[in-house]
Amino acid sequence: MLHIAPRWSARGGADQYLLATMDSLAREGVEQRLAVGAVDGSAAGGRFPLVRCEGLDARTAMAAAEIDPVARAFAPDRIHLHAVVNPWVLEWAAGLGTPAVLSVQDHRFFCPGRGKWTRSGEVCSAPMGEHCGDCFSDEAYCRSILALTRRRLRAACGLSHLHVLSRYMRRELEAVGVDGAQIEVLPPCVHGLDVDAEEVPRDGVLFAGRLVAAKGVADAVAAWRESEVGARLVFAGTGSARAELEREGFEVTGWLDRERLAHAYRRCRVLVMPSRWQEPFGIAGLEALELGAQVAAWRSGGVEEWHPGPLAEWGDVEGLAAILRELWARPRREEARISVSPHGFAYALLALYARVT
Image (cartoon, rainbow, N blue to C red):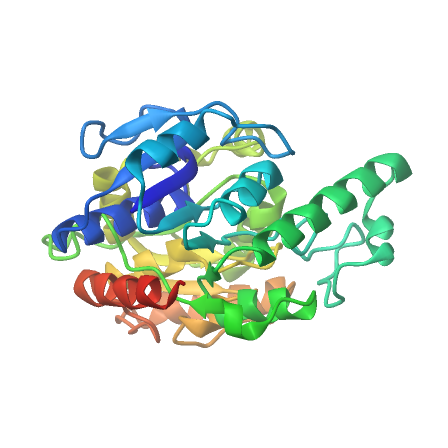
């Protein structure tokens, strides 16, 4: 198996999915190679043969010529592209003649804007089209990003299979013309977190993820304040909203490695998750549930597929505050609707690869 990804990292959900995939296949004895565009030092090296190829991490069409001799020298039976959005690379993989699957883990194949969240602050339910111009102030930029998104989509359709994390993502791809038979839904497993460690006192509310408007940082603060649960709100992550949160006196841990993130999940009684963009899956919520916390969240993208409920409606800060208050008052563990074991994940991966022809 040749894996191709924008970067070798442990910081994001797509990064953890790649790590889980490679670790699972290694336990099954699959020979693997990895080609990436960048290495940020957050993931351990030396676990798999790795080569860097310039252009694999590009977000626009950019030739990544170094990948071709790598692929031909290794001669893999299958290729798995992970969150690659450079259309040149997707077109190259489609023309290589080797069965290939692409993991689509965000909106950049069917939404040129903000992740199915409009500039006017509403959920977008319309398929990609000329109306997407309403989300842009620069007409020329809108035309270029729309053309780029459509080129990505065309290139992706030339691959053997597309893999997504949720039924929500499959519906969005089908809405822009992808054949549903080409799309495989395979949810992630919780990877790299010690789920059996000893419990610690749960005394706080946690927000985990990128500290940006799309993740609902301001809504998390507003719901926490309105809930009046009397517990501190901690932010695990970093991003453009970090400085403002720190000015307001909140504790911001920055990016946490898996050991410290697991400890943060165990310390919190409730994880708050008001995603403004439509979540492709929402892995932080599943991780929190697996480590015994509860999750106060909006109905966003694929969240309802794993969340045990109740969920607040998207954009309802008062409803989110009420759920946060309710969960805080009855601290008991809720089971996720989706819980994939590492063994089950490996089995599902091998079954997917067997269908990729």
